[in-house]
Image (cartoon, rainbow, N blue to C red):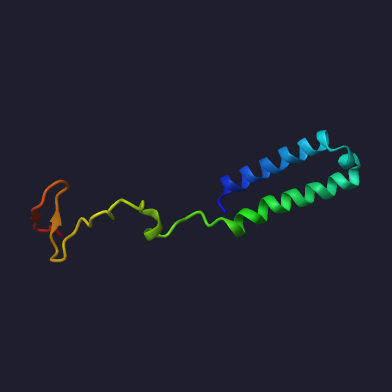
Length: 92
């Protein structure tokens, strides 16, 4: 999980903790609030890193009706110019 995602998850857990402290009277006990805080921060840190991968396979990233992108190099070592159908010799 990236740093920005981790910060967002922790901020969400902290906000949920504050909401619970205000709206759930049973959690106003310090011991219960501490337990709720530990659970929320644990879930915020572990669940996204286990459940979300953050990347897709190349086959999955193409929309269902779209054609895959064409390669810019031909099999014979020539490079096709964008928008043209002819190939120019590759310079190396």
